[in-house]
Length: 268
Image 1 (tube, rainbow, N blue to C red):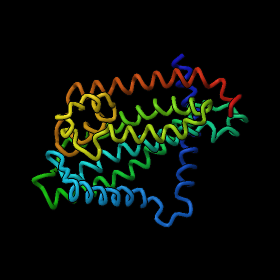
Image 2 (image 1 turned 30 degrees about the horizontal axis):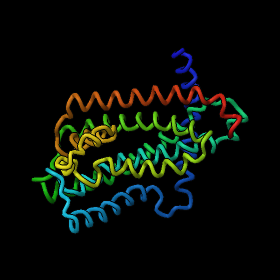
Image 3 (image 1 turned 180 degrees about the vertical axis):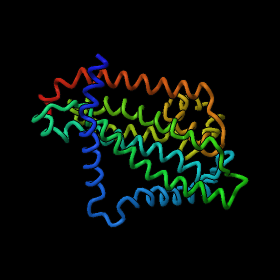
Image 4 (image 1 turned 135 degrees about the horizontal axis):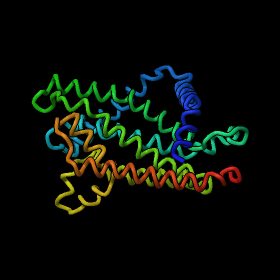
């Protein structure tokens, strides 16, 4: 069975790249800044957030500047948001194609995740620029470590987790269109459950740290920061939670999508 699925996937890889290329061209068509906006946007938001949280609210993460702390967390989280939000309507948006020819339907949410991943790679240029700025101006706070070459691991974990969530959302949206609106609320709540704009240490006195640690994105982002900024290897617990979160979501998402896909044609 697995060999059949892998063979089917291999046959449609050119289509996957074609769909990704189409989305890329559509997003930046008639845009003056084009791809440059994927670099400028996180930088501008980082400047605003840093000004508000350091100057007004006096938030200061342990062992790193707030700007570096924020942009490393927001880059992964924004990828997750873009991938899952885009995937929700991926089946509905390609209904005319699905009705005409046979295409494995999981290709459509997977393509949205790939497109979001490419955008994240462009956003990583902004992360590198901020990181480099602090290496030059504040070498005591931020320095270059060999562990930076391992940052692809939490990035891949985030991608796989997003694919699992996207499979579930894309299937549910076909039957329940309200998911398009509900997910916006959920993703906002999820943002505040993830230590992006605040350090997790401030929750220790309130006893709410355990809630944050139920969030798989916390482990992906924490690993990313440890490898890139602190120069430390994440714990085995961190790695296992990240791996199991991805595995469970991929299996559950795949089973839900597979069970629902035969009824898509009646609802799109």
